[in-house]
Image (tube, rainbow, N blue to C red; front, side, top):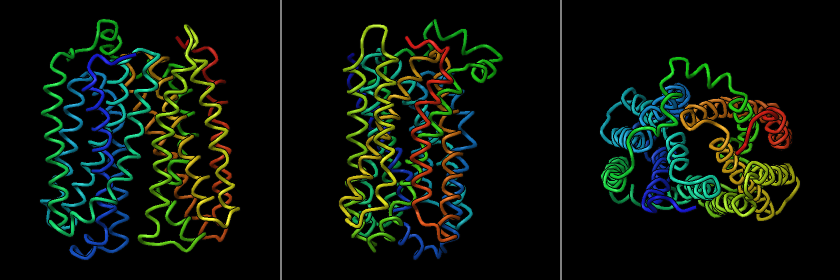
Length: 400
């Protein structure tokens, strides 16, 4: 169960935190940036859309790139490129240049998840992989907690440009540490991966594989809750409890702390349930329990107590992270190692598209006066369908 080098695991986790901090900087610094650069809310919305578009457009390419480069080089390219893109925000002048920086950051950060999943699949055996993925997946929640607490103070002291340049510099330090720590990690794919990675019709094989679509459909259905709360949670609490500004900080931080805990516990649970030649059963049991827990989401609309709602939504995100960790672990079990990067990227691409559709539907539902309850119910139903879809579509898929 142990990684070949514990330092590599620490660096993969740290890269996940950096990935989230880099993308969240603009949200935390929005009031300062809007004042200094004269942005409107529409300008900010366009920048957010450009970041998302960059990621969606890049996913098919980065999946192929990660599979071709292997864990050592793909980590270096991923963190190095997105750190340069983040630092460029601190140097640009004008909305057009800032837009290009956001587009570049979205495209380069798309490498984050495929690279991390492929790296941990190479470092850990099937039993320990879920726990390692749980630690990595929880990194995004840590970034969600740390960024709003630390960055505003640093921006007031040093200015917003230094914040962008600083996180870029930290990324370059990370690259140096990775080069040192991974010097004994083979830069090329193992022998059993080489043939699949080099076939000219490799994408045809990926798309023809039943396991690919089982995992992609499960991800699209399960990601609904994450996308909804990621973008609409502050507004939900504002509408329900009239919270705004600093008053949102503690309950939101608690919810994401629950998400981080769920990521770790979900990985540990499947590792503890694991039996020889029954790893797929253990993963599916944890995912089923996690989906049932996530389906309590609509109950948050029926409470008038802030901390009851916080506890319910904290449980939802904890369950989501537990499900997500075991879905990624199932992917590494069921998909040939040479395709892990591409299948992960395809799942992320479809999950992003599904999330974008849900976010648009949420805005329209609120504008029509329907409130959050229909959207919460739809997300809960989607979650209950996710393990069912995985089971039905993967009926003939071999789980080692």
